[in-house]
Length: 202
Image (cartoon, rainbow, N blue to C red):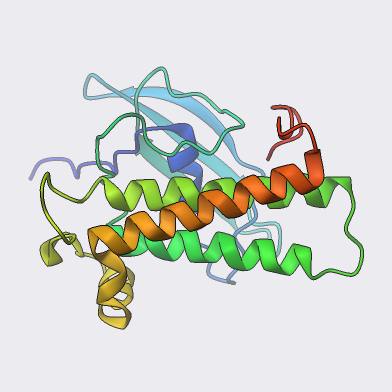
């Protein structure tokens, strides 16, 4: 039997997202990850280790990823038009929704400070990036994301719950609305329209 293929992530951001979508058995997603670059079967990979911040259980992931992939403060999950190999379009749209829920939680908090502004800016930006990832599953000239792309249980559930969201027009409209919402937030909280510096994002 050959060795099992490692999950392939395109960027460090996608690696962390992939890991966070696979919480500890206690349900916690927070871990102070440490990672080390590896070469396995001649291909670059990265080994992540850490302890669950809730129960202390040791956790580990080994992911195939480009050698040049490094931590970054933006919210680009994948470079260019290459589709994700670890998340399907249903999962990506659910990720966008989860970031939206996080933004609403922070915005509705009675105490909204400078750190919260950075968190909301990041989550609203991530919503746009996640929808961009869904759009990469649209073949040229196709009006809807093909059903066979929804290969995971959660991705399939997202598709069956709202198949109309995966049409080209619907996705482009949602992407536009999310981008406009992000621009309004930047204008309201940063004034000059520049947004936070890299050191403020996260």
